[in-house]
Amino acid sequence: MARAGTLSLDDLKTQLREADLRATAPRLAVLRCLHDAETPVSHAELADKLAPEGWDRATVYRNLNDLTDAGLARKRDLGDHVWRFELLRQTDKHSDTHPHFVCDECGEVSCLPEGSVEIKTTRNSPVRLKERVHEIQLKGRCERCN
Amino acid sequence: MARAGTLSLDDLKTQLREADLRATAPRLAVLRCLHDAETPVSHAELADKLAPEGWDRATVYRNLNDLTDAGLARKRDLGDHVWRFELLRQTDKHSDTHPHFVCDECGEVSCLPEGSVEIKTTRNSPVRLKERVHEIQLKGRCERCN
DNA sequence: TTGCACCTTCAACTCATTTGCAAATCAGCC
DNA sequence: GGCTGATTTGCAAATGAGTTGAAGGTGCAA
Ligand SMILES: [Zn+2]
Ligand SMILES: [Zn+2]
Ligand SMILES: [Zn+2]
Ligand SMILES: [Zn+2]
Image (cartoon, rainbow over all chains, first blue to last red; front, top):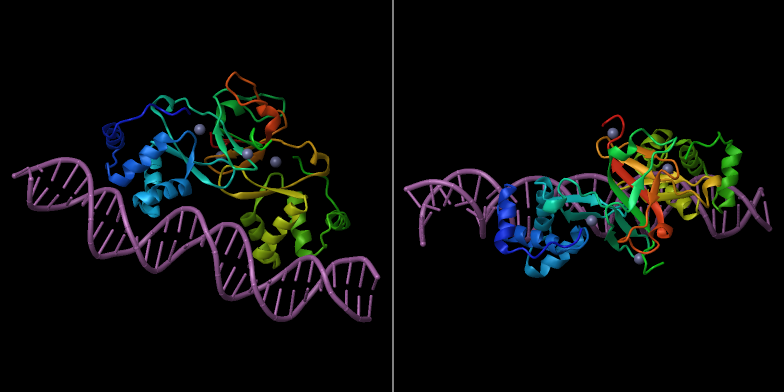
């Protein structure tokens, strides 16, 4: 969830090639943005950020999906009906399921520390719910809007 | 979250009028479906169910939004990029924040018992997170798909 | 019963995302 | 370093969920 250290251009290229993706300029730009992001990013945000550099929306979109298909990123809807993409960091690949929080009011998204939400086993809960949950999303008011 | 006892047509009409909505035939049909549903229902599901009875998609949609605006139902995205509507039952109006679970695989939605998820206060979590959370959504594999 | 504000319908519209395709670009190979 | 085939890009056009406008219909309070 925290930003990884800055990666060199070659690091990014390597990351793509290892995922069997060609290291093209727009692809690198998208990957870099995801690396720089602290929280999941929407397509619109990324496209707006990259448009000035001359990259097409459709290209950005395709690349986000390509990265997702290749297992480098995740695409999800955090409960606000917006697709957001988040890089799967090396260290997270097998364990990271940190919860996300979205503000009802301003839409701000934040990544919560792993372990800040606990699935409890109660008399009425489905069997082994805890082991079956892969993703946790919370909605409410952020500190600022509260 | 469990289905309420069957309501008579008059009960439904009363419910609408108390919310300052006219008791029209399509509106009653939509309200009845929401009453009958065990879990949140998508617009598409409702429209498909009501189309054979002759109701227009736009009418169903507007009614779902009307019911939501009037405070009788809630509209949300459970993390699967689908709008779903759930009736706000009398008894739930002030307290109900039961979590929802969506299966990644088959899309099945279920309502979980209140209290099956606990927001914990950890060193790193935002202040008073627990009090600020209004909605909890989980995703994973349902018992059947697991 | 009447009047009118609220509703329904249908088609047309919006806007995010996806797709088709020719031209551009990449990666491997002389 | 150039050559070549497979991928990828950019643009424009298609798609599809969701929304809206307008005209006629209906619930309901008086
Ligand atoms: Zn906020
Ligand atoms: Zn995150
Ligand atoms: Zn399932
Ligand atoms: Zn529910």
